[in-house]
Amino acid sequence: MKTVFKREEIKYILTGSQYLKLRHMINAHMAEDKYGLTTIYTTYFDSSDDIMIRRSLDKPVYKEKIRARSYGAPEDENSTVFLELKKKFKGTVYKRRIAMTLGDYEHYVATGEYSGHSQIFDEIDYAVGLYHAYPRLTMCYDRIAMFCPEDETIRMTFDFNIRCRRNDLDHTAGDRGDLLLPAGSVLLEIKISNSMPMWMVSALSSAGAYPVSVSKYGKYYSQELEGTAGRYGTYSNSIVHAAGAQA
Figure 1 (cartoon, rainbow, N blue to C red):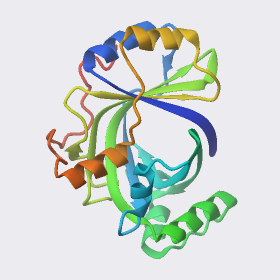
Figure 2: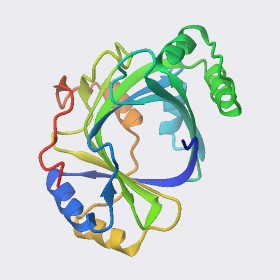
Figure 3: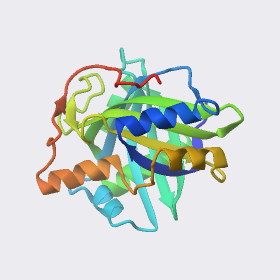
């Protein structure tokens, strides 16, 4: 299982019609991964005064995030949770992560103790201590992940129904939350290690999709500061296939 990643990440916010058009044009080059439409649970760590996300919004040359992620709702304490340290330097993303059980993750959050020490864990643990970080926000979204069979360094993810909450941060507490984007919006992330192939450039241009500088956590934090968090409504269901999601 890969634990270290280095890549460029380019983001786009699509309307439903843009998503359908883009999917139609890329299906000859991209394939869905074996999991299909999956609900991702991500908990972001930060300090009590939100120092990490505040620094991130200043768009520094270097920034980092600490988060825990599970793919689907954990079923029991032996389910897998990934603890991650994500760094971004001059536009390049470096991600390091370890897999642990839900029980070990909850014990680490409660006590700061973990028995499975490794170099990667020590790096993450150092960052947690440096920022006095602890779980601050849980975000869930329904994701379709795709890869390019001709070049598996190229990946695309489409996130639907992005929702955020500040309470009940346990990944077993459901996937409800405030919707981050207007209904029908889709967040596309393209992850590449080299240059973008021309077929992808052409497809994005034809769909009228243009890159945006956006962080899901940062956007929700900004909405909170503006008093607009939840303006797009709330979401309280488990996976619901977005219209056309299986195009």
